[in-house]
Length: 180
Image (cartoon, rainbow, N blue to C red; front, side):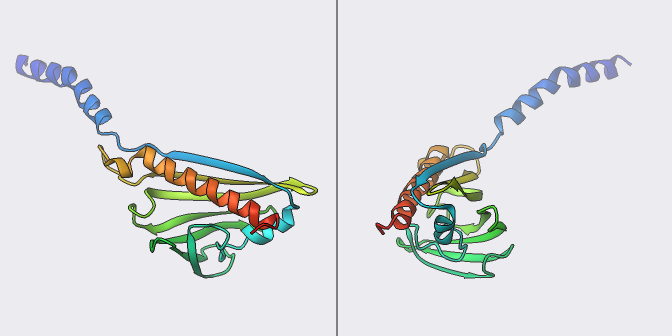
């Protein structure tokens, strides 16, 4: 009886330590980026450029877009980047009426784009001759275990996505407004 009592007390005393170990084993946290830009053009004119899932020619880092399925759910596209990298994506939802679509990366080498489990949404809103394009993403860093190398950590993934979105939206603005 005493032996059972000692074993039970030991288990109760050590239980918090097992939970502390689980806290140290925590992996990466989901990151989020949202960038917006105002474009001096009506929503329909902006949507005509950004709203085709099969055409990413407005994005400066993209050399070529190949795809299947148009703008239907589960359509796919392969982006070949100017640096030779390749990103495969799938369309999740598309609404021409609401001027929005969401998609996810299905395959990418984190050395090309340091993210995992990446999902994104592009939305165009506005009135008259003014539009706002918002590009949002949620993702994990390129290295999913603890102690990531610097090029695959949270800061690197945030920098890569934020830079892509800012450069992309600036190029979109230039193209739509007539300068590109």
